[in-house]
Structures are given as C-alpha cells and as structure tokens.
Image (cartoon, rainbow, N blue to C red):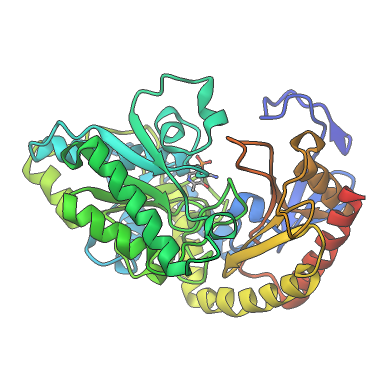
Length: 445
Ligand code: PMP
C-alpha cells in the first residue's frame, strides 16, 4: 500500500489523504513509508502506555487463548470481575460497581440512563432535565451529543431526545474577570448553575454532567479551586446527581487516577474509557455509587440498558493489564514528575510566543490556545483553519498532536491538545516540544 492513499474505509474525513499506519512501538507510530511519528497526543488521550507494550499484549493473548467472548446474560468472567475489583478498590469513595461498555460515548449514554432510571426507581419520574456545560464534549451518540456543549455538533441532529440546559464551563483564561479571584470566579459559575436549577425547578433535574478537566473542545480546561466542591454542595442540596465524565481526563492522565481526587469531590457516577484500555482494546466503564446500585437491586432488579459486547473478555484483559502496569511501574507518580518537566519545557518554549495565548493543563494533559496577539486574546480567522495547518505541519515534522478549532457560538478558536503516553521519557517530551514549536511557526508563517 502506498504511504498515503484515498481509502475506502469510511473515516470521518472523507476527502483527506491519510498516511497508512503499520506499526507502533513505545511512543511512536510508523507509516508504510517507514516514517515515524511521535505520538504526543496518545491518539486522542488514549495511549497511556504507548504502543506495543509486551505485558498488555501477553495478557490479551492469554485471554484470547482461554476465552474471547461470553455474553453477559449467561456469564460473568474472571477477568471482568478482577478488573471491576481493581477499579472499585481505587475508585472515589462509596463506589461499588463497574458497568463495562465499549468506549466513551457508550459510557456516557449508560450513565445518563442510569441516572434517569434511578429517579424512576425512587418514585421521582418527573426529573427529566440534565444540566451540562458549553464548550464540553461527551461523545457522538445522540444522548452524549445532547449533553455536549458544542452547538454546531448538535444543530443538524435536533431534536436530541433528552432535555439539556447548558451553563458556562470553567474557562479561566477567557472568562475570569480581572477584579475577581479564581475562587470568586468559581463561585460565580456555581451561582449561575444554581439559577439554572431554580429556573428548571430543582425537583425536575436529574443530574449535572461535566468533564472534571475539560478536554476535546477547548484545549484542556482545568477547574478553578473550589468550583466542583460548590457544584457538589448544590447538587446535594437539591438531590441532583453529579456525573463526572473522565473519559479523557481520567485514568491517571492528570496525575491522579481520577481527576476528581484533586477537586476533593466524589461523584455519583463517573465515566471512564480511553486510557482505561490504553488503546489496546475498545473499552469504557461507568463506576457507580453503591446507593444507586442498591436502589436498582431492591427495585426492578435490572438496569434497563445493555450492549452485545459489555465486559468483553479480551477488552477486560487488556484494561486489567494496562491498569496493573500503571500501578506496578508507579506511573501515576511518573505522570506528575514528567508532567512538571513537560510543563516547564512548554512554558520555556511558548510563554513568550506571540501566538500562544495560554498554556494550561495538569499531569500529562496540556492545551495551548492560539491567538493573533496575546493582549487582545483574539482568535485567528476560523477560515484560516490554523489548527488543521498545525496538524499538517506537525505530521510533516513526525509529530502527532490533537488540534481543535473552528467557531462554536464564536467560542472555540484554535487549540492544540497534548496527551503523551505516561511512559514518554524526558528526552522524548523535550523533542515533542521542539517539533511542536517548529510546527506552529511553519503553520503561522
Ligand atoms: N467524553 C469525553 C470527555 C471525551 O473526550 C470523549 C472522546 N473524545 C467521549 C466522551 C467519547 O468517547 P468515544 O469517542 O470513545 O465514544
């Protein structure tokens, strides 16, 4: 196969030529022309152990030799149980069960339905509204799309079947006023959420849904201190559930297994995927509070939801191996220390770059926001498609970065998301920054 080809595989981009990936090792992917690309985005914040990890591959082989698939209406499996045990041991307080699905959108769909069914089970079926945030992404299935905060993604698929009100995200760089502290800004956001709850009627709201650290829509949006504690208190006051979507920011990416650990809050439901299986198999999960699961058990005895591949044995084996390697090799601590080194390099390279307005993130999860000039914070004309040009320049440099851009309610702008594998060495992280620097300059020139 040539190195670049128009494929018959129906990918998202119908008109783009893509290189053909043939192998992956460590933090690199190699194409059919033999060119290697440093995977600085872990695909889409997926490949936490990089590519070709021998322990994960061995675990998958061992499982497929024993059993690949057993439908969940007949069996559970040892490997699914072992993975659930491990996840629950290290889950936020009070969580008792894991519900395995095949990816992030499925995890979000399942969480939305679990929350809705919970209120039906406890005799509050009038709760029909979700509240989510603008500038958020929760997946592409219809329910996940409805809670997602990008108007342009939703528009042509309306009506979206569930009721969702959207409030402001935590976007300190653009939205914090000069006369307020980060804490005051967070309180203002919580007050806005409170007003929205009052408008809908607190007794009608099912859940507030948010990414703990925003990801795929605005180049990483970490919360300000106290924001999620305020959100949690508000939800508790009104009996509203808190669903945290950690599909992208979870499973160690920000330096703790769950990003919400750093916020001092415990959600009712948390969705995980991407780094859970590290890309070796498609897998996601919803981790649920015992209180919710017990309600189902004592009520109808059934969660009214399911897919054919729930808890697929090979997917569970891959995820179990990935999670064991993370623990065995102390990779959370490594994310924190390498993350600090990475941050220092990013700041050194870009903090006085005329077109990098903001550098924000945690652990090995970083975003750069591109602006025409740092004082006005103005975004580039979306028709320039700067994010796509940066991606192209980066691919020419042998670098994979995850670009975002375009206009969304006038609220998106061009961003670059960086989410390198946890196993990236300091030298590789330094190389990523150098190549990115050259790519941004080549794209803007
Ligand atoms: N939630 C979040 C926060 C995500 O970042 C994503 C994927 N980018 C999803 C859900 C959807 O996951 P998937 O693409 O695996 O369906």
